Image (tube, rainbow, N blue to C red; front, side, top):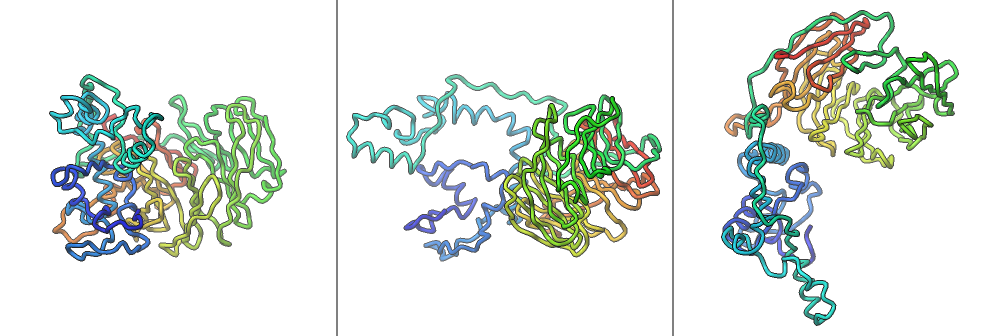
Length: 477
């Protein structure tokens, strides 16, 4: 943030310049990396095109932060590689050294001098700032200096911190600046069974695959209970699988208008309904352990056109709806505040999924896939002319094998294993990010409708339009 009277030369405008100031040029610059360096590329971009002025020596306009050459001057790529480095074995094995400097025995005294880890005396915690007997003018100057240069944290350790031990099995899972091209081809294990009714939901419990019929879904964290809608009396019911009857019946004027229903949001105690007039309602179970009631939390007003896909994220406080005309609308989940709407295609939005690791958003259209960030900025898109997508899921990084980030299902009965590839060869004139199909698996002759990945990431379970269930097992198990 630029304060009144600040020179543009004092603003954070270059990674190289800030690194040189902190490491060798200045003894007064003690800047550390804030968390945004590992998850928020927008803080490096002058999105609002604010006029920050010009640098004194070069007359260069201060705009986006200048990034290292290895990032291709792309803020998203810089953050991705920064986070990848942070999660590497090397950083894990040397984390204790940073702890020693910031919180440990090298923070003060002789060891701090040896490590060249000493700062202005007022930055160290003491009782001076709380000393009410100090001269008021002197105390005000001290507090002003502390506010300007900051304070060192409380010293927690007086001996060297233990080094983290990395399991040999986990070691090298995260390779810095390297994309693996070695892929393990998944194999189709077997057809499980053929059902007579359309499938509503699928889950794996106690090594068993369980399904529900159409217009029903499993309740989060409940083994015996299912949620049922589209009942003859327009109610929503909680049914017991063991007793084979309804144990709770809920009636509400809004339930009479339900056109579509969205559940299974990572076991969250919420469900979403969409009415025939395209209004979106967020509901919550009052007590998930007892299912004592259902409460309407918020109403979301979107577009006057059918909703074709929807997802929510509690961690990101986000609800995203995809519409038949290709528009996507973003709201705050826990306030129903409209954020923005975007449109990158004229085809219906088929599926929307948010990655729980880095909050990237995967969007599947009829025959194309988009990758967005939380602000709706398009990172990459790819059209696949021979495919018609029905669903998409993020595959947790490094769970199946390096190189596979997404799994998509198609009307042609295929599973498509997709890599979000990053071009790191600056001489090659290719897009920085590309979506590449690494392997295509023919599962059924019918359209694939449902897709889940087991918690252990060993199995993929899919169902097709003909109500057949399939399990796909990864190699090596």
